[in-house]
Image 1 (cartoon, rainbow, N blue to C red):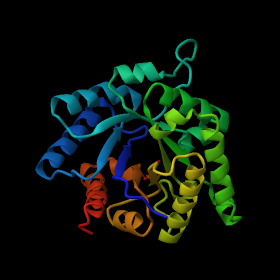
Image 2: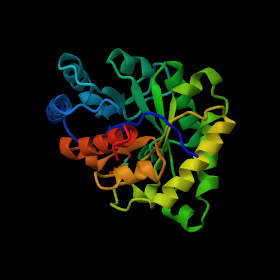
Image 3: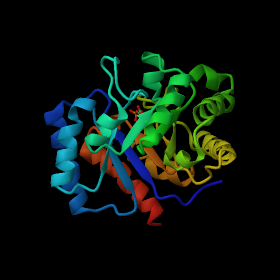
Image 4: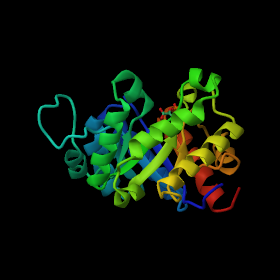
Length: 261
Ligand code: PEP
């Protein structure tokens, strides 16, 4: 099972780059995309909260063909939530995308399935495009329970989400054991899980939703992950912190979709 979705490549800068460094990277990406445009791929940059305003300014003033996302958002509209930001605050800054339930939020900041579901609801209700992150850890994979685990994560997040909001959801499969480790899931593992996720999404009337892969993606493995892995693009951490390595991945996705690879 595969789709003909236009690819999406998202750079998650995590807690790296201050606003000066973020501006520099966004500008570099802008210059490189002007020299060699990638018209067959959507690109989203996801800086830390405090850099967002600076990055959206560069993107707007220098007409960089990318959208800007946030790494997290609170499910509440406003109020006593020290340290958090709301969907309306992000939207006011020009943010169009948000990551929901990244494994680092789940494992280090107590983001359980109920909070992920509430955040997905709040994000899509506010018309933000939400990237729902799912994926098993190494122990679950060792027990060959990864499909049941990911299915439970998807069901808990999507159950009760209004059908009209579901087109705003993209799923990112990110096996935790592959994130930031340099160990990429094999093409067979990615392809099996992508097909499985698409079957679950079909049950939720979302057969056309994009399914991304994340976990040590780089310029060398991106084309085969799209081709044989069957994904619609990538959520990229480490390799998104340098314009050259990030754009090499964007170009691989672009060229696959355009039939050049
Ligand atoms: C991520 O954190 O979403 C990620 C995929 O990181 P990396 O590309 O560094 O593995």
